[in-house]
Every structure is written in structure tokens, then in C-alpha cells.
Image (cartoon, rainbow, N blue to C red):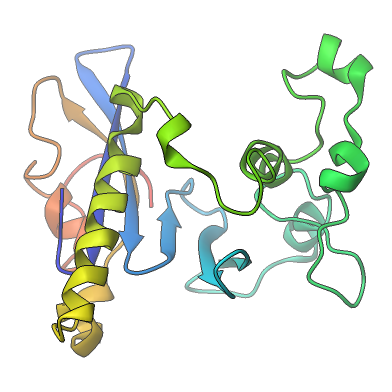
Length: 217
């Protein structure tokens, strides 16, 4: 669903009772994403900032709204098994990269994971980098129903870019308050409209505390 600041992306999963489990991710124009987190755990925010026509900087930020990170949480980040990537010291280059084949462990690939690659972000990089060179020719892609959010994001970015060329600035660029939103994960009755479900939309839009069974924020 489009919004002033970008996109509201809902993913539905089957639940064990009469409810559906919904995960809500925010795409904030032009390069930012807020990912749902379990209640009490770190909240993660990612940014993919273009550097030039062929490269970008990637940032992942973790925080709690009400307290500093603990030593255990920092150690969990520095295990590099989640959405945080280990860098070569003093650089922005990933320690596990295309040149060293992301240090794929073939034994672990056979017995522990589908990829054999250590962390979630490094697994992402392995399927994002160098498939067709610095710029991927999209004509080779075959997007399907599971790629609806990707399709919607690209359409939005292309439309905003064309508008900017014609002198029309994005609305959100002059309205920082529109970015005061949350990601969330919650249970809703089967068949409920995920983006208008009573209580959920107020929670996601940052207006008030939830009146729903929020299982992650």
C-alpha cells in the first residue's frame, strides 16, 4: 500500500488458530527500511545509500527506544550471524565477499543451512552482488507474486524520479513528520483487511499504543 513516505508492506502467514499472523515492514523513501522485531529485542533499521551509478553504502542500525544495548546484544551483533555485516577493518568492504566466495562452508551447506554462508546479511549479499556485473539487466528477471513489494517499490522510485526531473519534489521531503511510523507484527482475524484492521493502523502510523494483540514492534 502506497503512503506519503513510501510503502507499507504486509506479509501474511498461517497461524495455528483462527487468526492470521501479519508482519508489517515500512519502506521509507528513498532508501530506508524498518523491519519488525520481537518485543524487547533490538529494533533494526537498514539504509541502502547510492554512492554512484554502480555502488552503494549499506548501513544497519540497531537500538532500543528506552535503554542502551547490553554487552550481550553487542556481542550478538558482532557474531555477524544476523543482519549485520563484518567489515575489513578501516574500510567499508565486507570481510565475506565475492572475491572469497563468501567463505561458503560446503559441509554446513549439506548439514546445517541451505547456503553454508555465515550470516543473514552475507547470504543476502551473495545473491545480490555480481550476478550480471555492477548493473543488473532487469530484462533477465522473472518477478512473480512473491515480488509484489519489489515491483511496487521500483514503480514508486521511477515515478518519483521522473517527477523530480520535471521539477516536482517528493511530498515527504518537506514533511519529516510523515516518517514517524512503526513496523509491527500482529495477529488479526482471518479475512481482516491488514492495513485497516482496527488498532493496527493507529499503531503502525505511530498515533497511539496498540489495541490489538501486537506480538512484535
